[in-house]
Length: 389
Ligand SMILES: Cc1ncc(COP(=O)(O)O)c(C=O)c1O
Image (cartoon, rainbow, N blue to C red):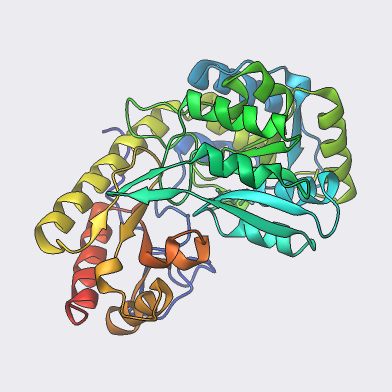
């Protein structure tokens, strides 16, 4: 490997959200990686920093071009540069879409378990989340399309927020599934907002399908959020994009993003995205291999030492979804279990309950860290669960 992902960087005391924990605690929760960003990104930021003047910025043409080239070459989606709109983050874009395309009191559909902040964007704007819960049987998640149709058939539902690929269950939706979701949405006059922030962290050899690439209908009836932040570990820079092929939808989301004042990037935002997409490919591919190997380590460890835990097979993201139902006591959820593990061992993982659906029987483990940290985390997980058995 050219890049050293084994190196442990001490992030304590650096105002990191993830690492703002007690001295003995080990955070493996929020989707933030413990790897320094690719050198090409650092160089681009250092160049900007060296100028010493940090005034208002414009988003250069090279910014949209970098997205278009990356999605065309990596994911087979053809976009035009003018179809992209800058936004400071995916969550701000989701909240803008909720405000623009729904009215207070209306329902917004989500396929659960799913990224918990979707619920904030819905509820904080006075809308009502409605869940289509995926079926979980024999350790596998599937989407029941009849259930989805019944969910979207409610005339109060006007927007579906999709997570593609799905955080936290680590599922890459197939082209057929995406086309079917799009067909059902269209038939029920529901707009789809596809959050594709995790799309570049698929296992080596595995490819995600952009929602808009699954069918022409999907392309016309959707807004997609894209960003380099999750996969290149630059979430703190706050740089993202929305893509809408339909000019009316694009105008509306652009208008709302500007009304919400989340359409202007900070002085580093465009440079970071351009460097990531134009020069970060080799780094990303090595990272994908490293994360894949971390996940294999977790599967082996759990099989050998924690056989009552089931780590879901997944082909994307660094967020592992652990079925800990064997350890959940009666009238309890994963929230209490996660808390006990934290108190006993200092290991801080996400409780599955916050992702709704059937998440109360799961923990989410972030393995985007050096192997030594994964080893330490698993040893703590084993100790934390030992007293539960
Ligand atoms: C599915 C998903 N969407 C959005 C975000 C956050 O996006 P942003 O930081 O661009 O608002 C996350 C962060 O974990 C996520 O998992």
